[in-house]
Length: 258
Length: 220
Image (cartoon, rainbow over all chains, first blue to last red):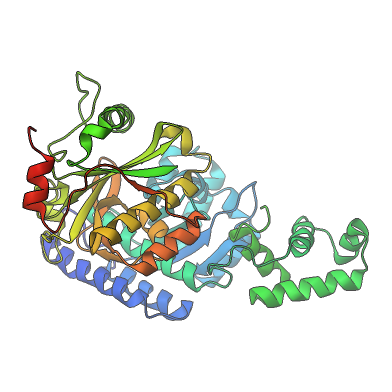
């Protein structure tokens, strides 16, 4: 059986499939409330995507100011090898599909982003490499939401991606519920307005700008040990194991500037 | 901002505000969103602006800055008349305690600065109004990107049908539960410690609507 997205307009049985998949999505929405951690949520989401012909996805917050995307990623289901290559080559900043995610507020096909962008040798290279990893085409759902951080969920298929409008709408609803549920489950995403104290924010802001603990201690005129203690407390408060993760979370929660 | 309740029963006291409301709606729904054809009198009204419609309008310094319209689902409403095919779960809802929420807006001048706070304050007034009226659910066709906001308010959302692209935006029919929790959730976001809901003049009594409406609409 082909792995191609099966609910295209040309499909004879598109109506039956539409009905079946729609229930899939409602059932998923109903299950969302029951998840207490991210992994089962993403496993569930992933299974439904497969029924639409999408073999993997990435779910990420969106960096600003030419940052790399890595510290914003919530769930990366791409093949590991591709992820490594994408990071090493800093493809995020060069890939038309990623760059479109930063600008768009509505769903788009990867092909649209490629067609609308400058056709550079670099872009073609990225596309061909992605294709070799089974990520040739896809559709992206920017999660535009004026009141919270920006995110995108991008779905990949090895085959042609020509979903009709109804399928796009269904997948968007599905992906939106996945995103909303994940946001509730992420550390630091509860109703607390600010997790960090003003001092902690200040320290983390400097560290995010690339300053070492020693440098921060000189800037703020405190001891280096105090900086280290603050950072440990920040990580503990946020429930994360390293400072990079703390920075990403704090940016996402708008506690520090990107 | 205070949020005033305008119904058929007190509409004469709010004649100027209603005129202002329909002119703002023309600016937003005709000129900005281009949902409808321009109207000669510069006022946007449709077939659902009947004696059954309730308008909540947010007024600051004498000017309307936000608004919404509510229609009982027992009356013709947008989902029942225009988008019934999208209500694929259990069909079109028809319930005197379920109201459709449409024509929700914030005027452009307030969207950038403080838009979210105004939204939260307005929604607090909406929840308070609904609780007071014994309304159990409110909702209707809405753009998908609203859903995360409701969730942040702690509102329980029921998607009752299929998402579909309407005028370039993906929309879905959905209702929210009206409850004390929903009110408290949005009130926290709104930074409000007092009610901003204003009832002035005669009130529609929803429970005894034949009598109430007959009085309110005399001469209409």
